[in-house]
Every structure is written in C-alpha cells, then in structure tokens.
Image (cartoon, rainbow, N blue to C red; front, top):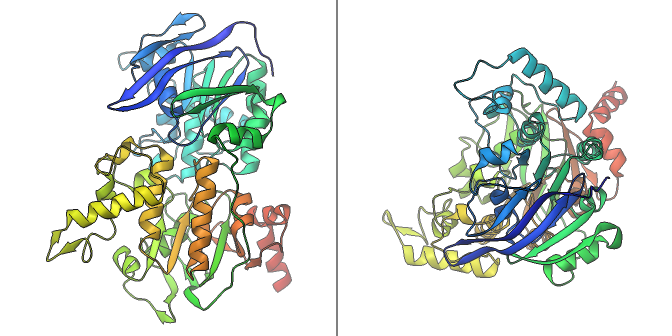
Length: 513
C-alpha cells in the first residue's frame, strides 16, 4: 500500500449534536493519498455520523472537511461527489423499483443533459462486476435481489464513479469470506494507484488485513490511533471498548425433543432467489442449528417459512408433533416462534415508531399490552424500559424514534423483544451483522442462554466462523437444497465450503446412485 506525502482528506474538529446527544465531539484525523485508514468504535460511537458529514448528508455543528486541500461546503453531497468522494453505506440507499443498472447510473448525469449511453454503461458495469468479483445482473430489479446482492450493487455504484476517496461502511457484512478476499485484492490494486479508503468494520481481522492505520472513536471522541503493523486484534478491541472483550464460553448443547420440523418442503422461486427443494429440517429443544451458505441460496425462503411469512408449496410443517395448516406470521408468533429478522430496518422495525412501539410490535394484541382493544401504554413503556436496561440499548429514552439509533442498538432492542417473550423456537437470521465485538459477544451469550433454557435456535449466518463456533449441528444450503446435518467439529471450513459451492450435493447424488 502506498501512503502519499499529501493528505487526500482532512477532518478538522468535527462536532455534531442531535438534541442533547453529542454524536461527534471535535473529531480530527487525516487520510493520505493511497492510504487505508480504519475507523473503529463500538456501535453508537459516532462513526457513521462522521462519515455522513464527510459525504455531505449531515451538516456539522462545528468543524470543516478538506479534500485535496479544498474545503467542502457543509451538507452538500453533490460537492462531495464532484470532489471524488464515494460512500458505500451500511444501510442500503437503493430504489427497489429500478434495475441494477438504473440504480448505479442514477445521478451520474443531470436530468437536463443528453441521454446516457446505456450500452456503454452496461458494459462498464459488467466489467467492474467481473473485476471486483461482485456478481449481479445489470437488468435485475433491485427489489428482487437478496441482501447480499444489494450490497454488491452499493459497492459497484461507488466504483462506477471513479472515486478518489472511498468510504466503506461495513462493506463485507453480507459477503462471504471468499468474496471479501476478492474485493480486498481488487481494492489493493486501486489503492496502489492512489485510491484513499476509510474502512469501517467490526471484523478486526479484516482491519488488520487491509488498513495501514487505525483511528478509534469512543462516545464520539477520538481516543487513539495506531498503525496496524504495531498492534493486534486484541489490543484494538481493548482500545475500542476500554476493556478486554471476552467471548462467551461455548459448551455443547443437550438436545431434547423435536419442536419444529420441515418434511420434504418445497417453495417456488421468487425472482432470482431460489425456493426450497424438498427440504428436511428438524429443530431440537436445547440445540443451536446453524445454517451456512452463500447469500441468495434459499436462506430467505427458509427464514420466511419458519417465521410464517410463507407457506410450503409441497411438504409438511410439524410443530410439537402436529402438522400445521393455515401457516401465517400471527400463527407463528402464537406458536412461540420468535424471529430476529435479516434486515432490521426493512422488516425488523418501523423507523418512525419509538422504542416502546417497536418493542411491542409483535405482541400488542392481548395481555399484557392491551385489553378489550385498548393499549396499556404504562405496561408497554415499562416493558421497553426493561429491555433498554437489561440489554444495554444506548438511547435517550423509550420515546426515541428508533431510526435515530445505531444499528447495534436497534439489534439489541429486537433481541430483547424476542428473548423476553420466552419463545420455544428462535429464528436468528444474521443476528450480529454490523455489530461491534462487544455486542457480538453479548448476542451470542444470549442465544446460548436461550438454548440452555430449552429453546430451539435456528442460526442463519453467512459468517462461517460464527456458524462453526455456536452451532451444535450444521446444515449447508445451496440453490435451495439442504445438506444433511453435520455435528459440531465434524466438517472443516474447507469441507463446508465444498457444500456451499454445491459440490457436496453432486457427490451425494453419485453415492446414492
């Protein structure tokens, strides 16, 4: 990596307040040409707010931003784009009703300029997609894409604009380890040619692999900085949290009876996303069942099925030994199934509802939160306050609009909402995506505690390390097909990777014939 002598970017005493909350407090640091600076901090430390100021989406209350020696006008995204600043957002900023190509080229030209050469734009998108190993069809409607595919579009949208400074806010949260390695390899080529990068990630091994330097925020202030060559992941975690981050101890679970079963279940494809193909799955009390796979291979269909969002086209759903009919979200909740959804913004919360309203979203009908059709706001508020305290949701109060919280604190509220209901079955779909190491450890410990209390947990994650660490049994899903159950430690990461690529299923068929 080439660190230039001149600063490509300089942030000077950036301060931003939201009411009584100070998100950034006189933050200053610089990034050299061809340098990668990782910005670390716990959820809610002020990282995303700071990057939104740099990208012109927020106006700071104090301080200035300089790009290649020129001060940017505050709160002006067009000026940031024109200066060569690009940003891959942690939470997607795409139009669902438009194609991938239309999203990527949106805003490249003025509405009053001559039309864009669509063929040339398409060829450029295809070239970038192949070079950066970000497979996605330019003609696909964004609304039909998986979360992982949408993240690829966000990255391509920034790369399409030939940015000189690239902000990556959790860019690999929905990429497989292999896809992340491919992305880093291509980024290194661009960095060698002078691209400057601000890299935000909670995956400290990625920070060590890609970054030259680290700047750490805590409670909106810069608390330290260090070159990656002079530190390690343990020291970085301690700098972020002010203490050592200890993962929970993981002992094998003690499986009980079958609580939930899918028997030869199939579902139709939805757009480019495959449905399930004659899937058999058993969730046992006192056991974490991990589901590994590359994004977009049927995880969404399986999660929707378990959560009552979808009914099987063929096959049976069995709960506590009885076949279910008329499967729906309401019936799933009434049956003791709780879900941590994949997308906390789109399907997990309602942005303009406050924390109290979001805390009771799935349980507002009936005791203890309503009676004779009237909501009991006192009990609802008390429930929200209990979650805020017990799960360390950092916020001004239960009447705060949830859209003002960091992603990690939203996730903690959802986790509390799920676990405080005492569910029989927990659908944990990407439960730690975008969380800092302390929050990850906390979520994992809560899932393990729920398992040990007798719940069945279905853990869906694209992080193979997470699956292998927490799961008592592991299934792999590829193109809607489900592998046999593998016991903890039975398969190596490489062997699971073969199944994730679909090759294990071919071998299984050959043996069967």
